[in-house]
Length: 139
Image (cartoon, rainbow, N blue to C red):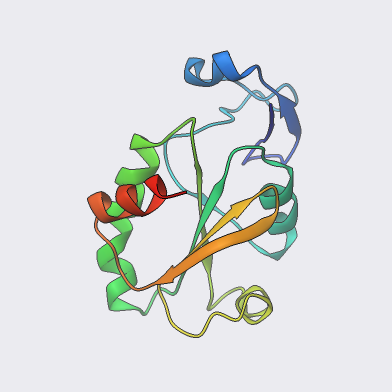
């Protein structure tokens, strides 16, 4: 299974049965599947989303957004609970307006689920950790 290192963006091959073993990057030695969301920007977004064989759930948010701040702990909790099954990432739409425009983000928070680089679903609005888990279970 190919997984992108969130630190150096190297593509690592990890056997599926080893995902729970906290694999390390062959290039930089960092943990490839941290149990927390990864911050993405314009330079890292495409490679991270397209080259990961695990689904990638992206939270498009902004620092001034109250519902985004409220949802952040639930998103982090869901990232820890689903580590090794789904990659969790965040895009600050204030800092990355090009990405927000490219994906037509009109309200925040917006969650977009990508599989092999293709967006397969999205939902707008804050969600609790159980709501996130239920939404992911449908995919």
